[in-house]
Length: 368
Ligand code: OSB
Ligand code: MG
Image (cartoon, rainbow, N blue to C red; front, side, top):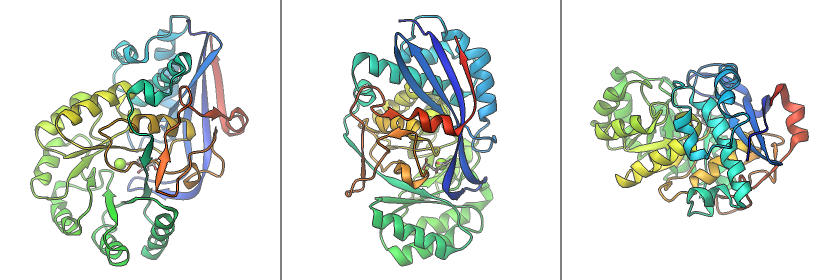
């Protein structure tokens, strides 16, 4: 089958609550939705890049440019590439992982719909439901955070992750432990600290955290290894793991003992699978991270998270944790047992709500 058309849409969805990380306070989720059309079938993918290059170097603007001017011309009017071959095809384009991953995700969805198989089954998934954790932002006051934790524990979330930054770390974690005892708890610094801050992490090491996510700079594997050597708590890398090759280097020098896998960050599901397999071979647990995705990105994350070495709770919260209305039907829901079911229908296994997508669209273009 031939790729007849590709549509790009820049979409902005308001968040129900402000979400503050060490790098920004966000009130909306901005992404590109990629729609690939071939032989009467379509596939959808998401580029969760936002307006500013703060999580990594990409934005929806850079992703649009790279897709329109470089990636789409490689695919349009040609045979649909197998999604497993796509990463190698676009490898000459350096980085721009989210842009690549968005189109690759649409090809994976299309492949699943064509085969009548769920994306989970296509990828070799073995789990029908994913243990759900939730990622909670920095709040102006500790009591606000404690109330939010209480709310989401009552809703059934199995693990709490809190964002930290200098001044919102050891005392914050101490208060959480004081009020909620031995819950599954982890922290994420999004690179807010320097190697000299090691004493802060040695203090956090006393709180039996599941892991400490991305304490230091993205490009600094060596200092992560030096820090890991001082801690019992596993360091988990997020931003630093940009490819299977980086994952291998990080593990080789013991810079981390857990990896957060986000297909968007590493250039797509194919690269994510390689990191999953590498970690599995080395008995390194992984879990599925998120980037505030709409249901389109979230459904793909669920399929990825169904692979066997995704053994820690995911940042895969229900649609209603961020959005009043998601762009898929049914929305992602949290079951009473604290899990989220993996869609079993063909491809992403969810219905795309074009009406809601239209309402949220800031710009759209079709390439044929
Ligand atoms: O570092 O994991 C992160 C959100 C935006 C950017 C970076 C991160 C996050 C999250 C939220 O922690 C994950 C989610 O709920 O989708
Ligand atoms: Mg993170």
